[in-house]
Each structure stands twice: as C-alpha cells, then as structure tokens.
Length: 109
Image (cartoon, rainbow, N blue to C red; front, side, top):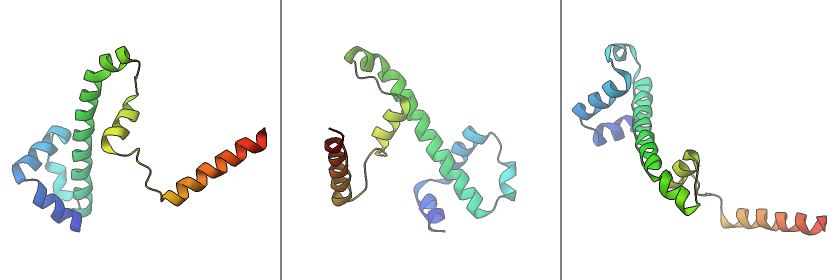
C-alpha cells in the first residue's frame, strides 16, 4: 500500500494518464483492476519508459563505443546506468569468494 502513496506523491494525474495511454492505448480495462494490479501496472509502465530512454541513449552511444573498442551490450549498459551491476554483498562475503577462487587456482597448479 505504501507504493500507492509513493506513486501518488511522485506523479500528477495528467502525467499518469499520459503515461498509461502511451503504453496501453486504452484505460477502459482499469476499472476492473484491483489497486495492487493497478500499482504494478503503473510501476511496469514507469520502468518500461525508463528502459526505452536508456535504449535510445545506448543506440546513440554505439558508434562511440565501437570506435573506442569498448562496445557493451544493451543489458550490460542498462545494468551499469541503473546500478544493477553493483554487488550488494558484504566485503567479507566478496573476500571469501575471492580467497576460494585463488585457492582453487593454486590447487590446480
């Protein structure tokens, strides 16, 4: 339910209707949606719009990436610009994984 209030505070009604009409072309079916389904639909629309903007940005950057020899796929680019590639584990967990990988390499020698 707090997502509903968060969305309500962030988006005015006109922008919300515009967003939903651009993505779904009709609002008739929304009368039958539960509040949870409506919130999920709005969140999906917001994510979809953001992803489309990032795709356009990535397409514009492809020539530069190719010329520099640092091409990355859209998924890699999307993860980088949204922060999804950040490892949220604790430093101890990451260090334990590194130590295990080093130990495995030394065992194979």
